[in-house]
Image 1 (cartoon, rainbow, N blue to C red):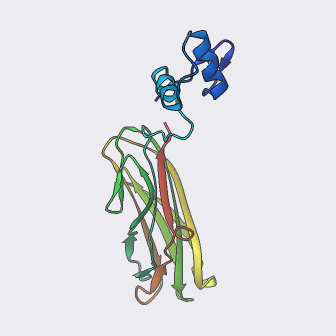
Image 2: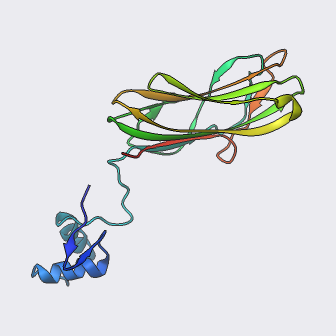
Image 3: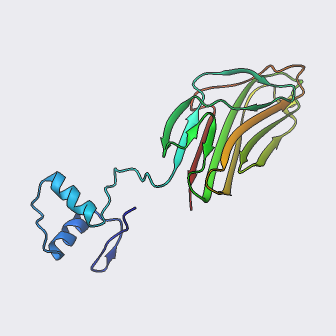
Length: 195
């Protein structure tokens, strides 16, 4: 990743003004074409604002449709994510994120469950990262039959090749009658390398 240039007393991610000032200070031709200018600036450590920082893995996935009858009778269901909004680094596949490098990762899961009856007692949203379950437990669901959105968010240290998945469990129902609402506004899993 390009580092910010220091120009005079200004240190920042360079703007066009700073880039022009840098070129003048370096005696460079600033009447070049846009492509030549972009090439010149990149070669001198400037990064365009509209270019993604592909050196940091990040993803956002969601199910495109509803996931039917996946839990309810204490079945632990690994959420099936079939749609990627983005996957910077191509590190998400088969419902699993695989850390490409060692570092600290931030993960967030939001699960919207539906079709609970008054028999549903508890729910649990689990992010399993690096082989460790990070659970958020929700009780007294029998007071809220119907649907509810349940979040879980963690920040965790992973070594390269360790994985992260999301699981959901609802108990108290006579069988697995609980669904997960699909679509990005209902059920989503995202993560990114933060350090």
